[in-house]
Length: 173
View 1 (tube, one colour):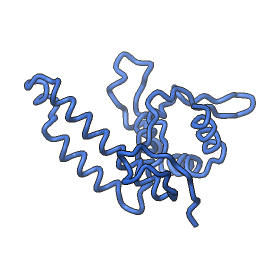
View 2: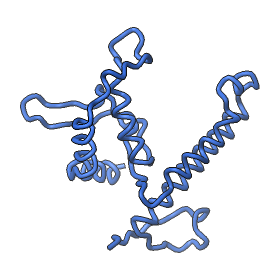
View 3: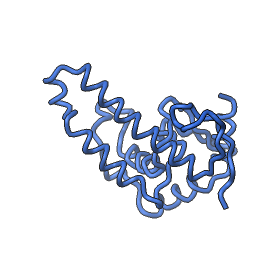
View 4: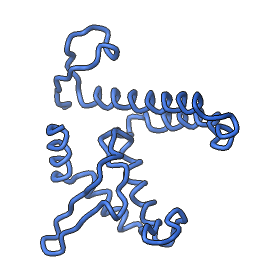
């Protein structure tokens, strides 16, 4: 059963100015719309401010197709849009050696995103060495094995502490 949520939305997103009642699925659809609209607005702005040679170098003309492909891929019923950290690299995950308590820091890139992206990005970040002269060169031999990936995904998806922390952070802001 979907939990009912009272949500005040900007009038540009709803037909009337009344406060609609939304289900969790409605919220996911709303966040997905915001996500894809934000990407398209960013692309439009980038095309407007980039000189043509830079736009060509960054292949801005091909990004609309990529955004559409991603939207199609991540808009199915089996996909989940949620609040994501978007930078879960090892430098942003702190572990207290005594209590083994985990703290995630640096939420400046946080946003609503496909949850699969947050998980995949975490694994890709493991291939980077931010203490080297060339952190942009990735070493995929450091990519986690199946068991480590499975353990992380299970913890990420079911952690009540993570959910409670995110809700508390949201309510404080």
